Image 1 (cartoon, rainbow, N blue to C red):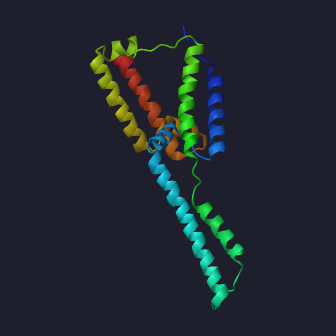
Image 2 (cartoon, one colour):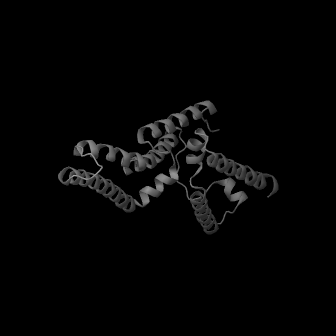
Image 3 (cartoon, rainbow, N blue to C red):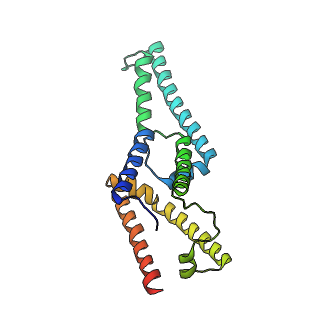
Amino acid sequence: MSNYWPWWAGALALAFVTINFTLTTDRSFGVSSAWDRVLHWRRERNLDRQQEEVVDERVLVHALATATAQQFGTPGVAPESPTAEVQPSTQAVRQSTPRRSPLVTQAALLLSIFIGGLIAAVTAGRFELRLDMGAAFSQIVTDNPTAMIGTLFVGGVLVGFGTRLAGGCSSGHGLHGCGRLYPVSLVATAVFFGTAVVVSLLLWKVI
């Protein structure tokens, strides 16, 4: 018989992880978004470079305008010091552009999930390398290895498609979005778990 944490201990642990991740990175806690950023690290690097160029270009334009007004005197514009002009523009650009968390935080999140699961399985004495999904999966779905791999592959593709379509997974919507009472997250989470309940009842009671 497997020993699991009490429900309240698991809830406190998830709350601690979600709040700590948000305060540390200033980003929503989501596994699918982290996986997407890590897979497309080159795109992320290009986006960061473009963002820096936009900020530098805007600051440069404001600085040049101020210098021009001071040198030639623009009618109706009181010349001010470059420092006074550049600093507000920099703050405005930073406020208009959400701060992106470093890519390493997303990689650390995924790595921590893997290491945490490994440590939990080893300490509980239930770590085992296997090529099947267990007796329950074989009994309900299929016990053919080829069909099992195909089923898992198609299921994984559908999960990925649904995650992108919903704009997040159960961790992003369920933990972070519902905690902040986002309407879209409340609806998405209700659909996630409602579908899971219906499918479970069909598998165990009907099929």
